[in-house]
Length: 234
Picture 1 (cartoon, one colour):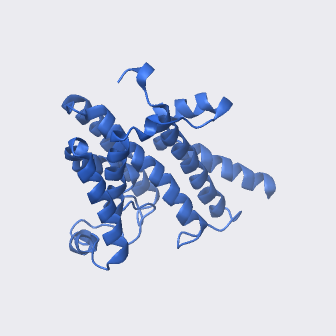
Picture 2: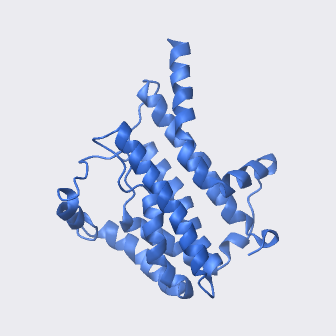
């Protein structure tokens, strides 16, 4: 797909998701210094994160469809996978050094790496992708057993995984959102209409197209800013 034929809305979704993610992480940084309370047990920030990952993962699914329908471009796919997996490894190593008891072993980038492989076969079957995606969410929310908790129990000790983690993106149910995104891509949902962002359009597009680098390196300056505010206030 050439630059002139890009679907603007999918770039907007991704760019807005990155901006909201940075706000989310900055709020966490502020909570470290006591400026606000950061609760992730059903409160505002739980739903805020839900919005962020929904934007991210529908974009992932739609992007898979747009890039690989009707023919899977294997070289492009594996090159993208390698970059995201490398980013995930960077996140794991850096958080292991900073938070050895709660390092990130399966965060957003880990999830995207795995979910992309699982969802790729469905780019030629968007209706089936939608059916399975919706079913995943329904089963996860309506049953006590449709999750990967048994795998967690089985592999926790052998892999020496931390009991807690700074970030956990559950494969179930969120792989369902990627599958739904494939269907949205097939429906040309992301080509329907662009958001009227006005002067923010160029920055959002820039952020979207450099989302992986921004995701990897946005936190240190934000934490530094929170620290600076703390020092100025106190």
